[in-house]
Amino acid sequence: MAHIAESHANHPGPRLYITIALILGALTGIEVAAFFLEMSSWIVVWILLLLSLAKFLMVVFFFMHLRMDDNRFALLFFAPMIVMVSIAVALLALFQNITR
Image (cartoon, rainbow, N blue to C red):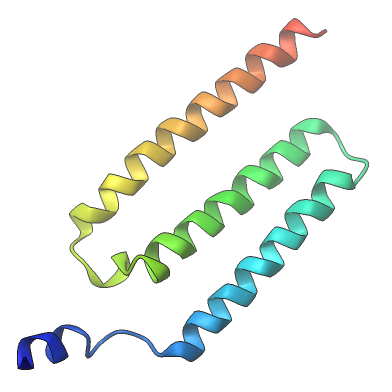
């Protein structure tokens, strides 16, 4: 029983999770606002990609507790994220050239 208490001793309290949830909500609001602004589509895409990356990192590190785990577990999330963003950027570049 003491082992379980020790493993949860360094976890943050509810206040941090509420703060993270509010930040995630604010980032989502910025994403929605960026979609409706009159800007170049490439700028909007990069804004959305960066904000999505920030939200992904916050969820993975705080809500999935990877911040307190071994770094090898984080690699299981970062490697697919890098592949996904690379594919998305390549497809956007491909279809941008086709429509011109």
